[in-house]
Image 1 (cartoon, helix red, strand yellow):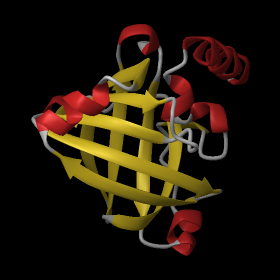
Image 2 (cartoon, rainbow, N blue to C red):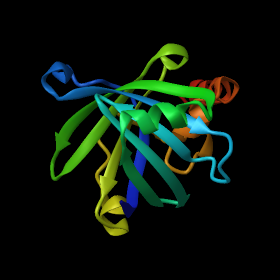
Image 3 (tube, rainbow, N blue to C red):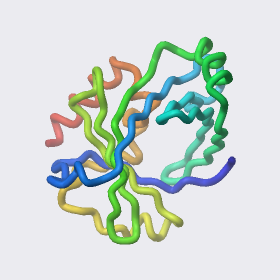
Image 4 (tube, rainbow, N blue to C red):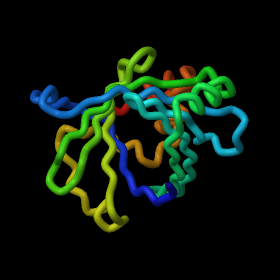
Length: 165
């Protein structure tokens, strides 16, 4: 399926105290080395498997995502970088939006972020940013998951976050 995605990403200062009430799921993502786009990935979410290609310009991303079988996933998995990330995602309703809170695992345990998807650019720009949100990461290319999966870049991002806190 191909569509446009309008999304903003933020660090989060404060996790909701009632987080346990919201649906959560684990996401594992691996990134390809043999695709021209650095944002081609494999994703495992529960017992579902996806192949996704993304490209973006500012807030708008073109996303082509296809659900694949476990067998296709295992076959493609052999050709991906050993660069991956693991995160626990919570779906939190907020006004007329859905906030997706990601708590990263393994080498990224210091990182917690939120993403909000919008139906259009106007709504994304007029979105009232909650006080619990921190620095906006939307335009920071090194905050994209494809970069976060690379440890040395994560350390640079961590230093940036520390210096702005």
